[in-house]
Length: 79
Image 1 (cartoon, rainbow, N blue to C red):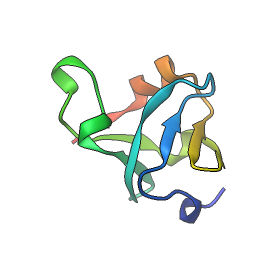
Image 2: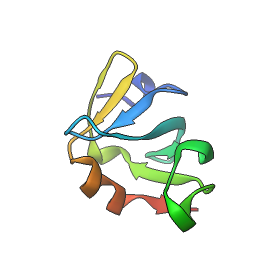
Image 3: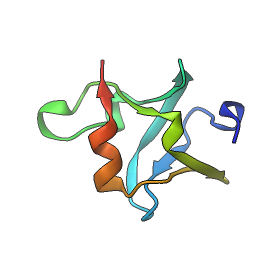
C-alpha cells in the first residue's frame, strides 16, 4: 500500500467498518484527520493523526485500518 493512494477527503474506517474520520492529508508517515471530523468531547476541534502502519488498504474512497475503530482511536496523536 502506497501513501500516494491516500487522498484528501477520503473516509477513514476501522477494520469493523466504523467511521473514524476524514483525511486532511498525509504528512510524515501519518494520516492527518480534518479538525471538523476528528475527535470527541474535549478532543473535538483538534487535528488527530493515525500512523500509516495501521492502514490495511484503500477501497474506493475509503481508507481501511487493520484495527477496529475503538482500538484505532487510542493510537491517534493530537497536535
